[in-house]
Length: 173
Image (cartoon, rainbow, N blue to C red; front, side, top):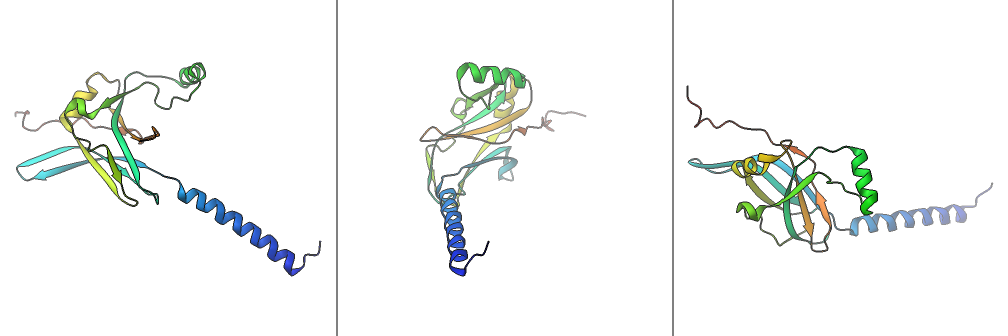
């Protein structure tokens, strides 16, 4: 097979333009990242500890977030039950067995609805006492954060293990 220079350049141009087209499609989609990390905030005499929820916008468009909820494991499940329920209801349940809890039930301000500019993030602290109240009836100490945009697209964080901390004020020696 003998390719002339013009044929080689035509193939190169077609491949390059296809790659750029796919790259632009991927870059133009809205993306939301949700991360959980343990932290603290406040002054010396009034420090609150808990889990921070970071909602990040790595895309090139503004993301409009309408709600934030915390999920905790209500019951243990197995993959066969998830597959059965998914077939039965004709949709994939990635959070089967998890309960959604609105932060407004625990009087925690999540700042939603909010518009997050490209390259920016929004953070919410969930205090330890709220987490302990939420996880009181859970089968494990794992939580996830779920963010919903205004088109009802849901993005969940990875599961985060909340450590049970002992309060040094309540312990006596």
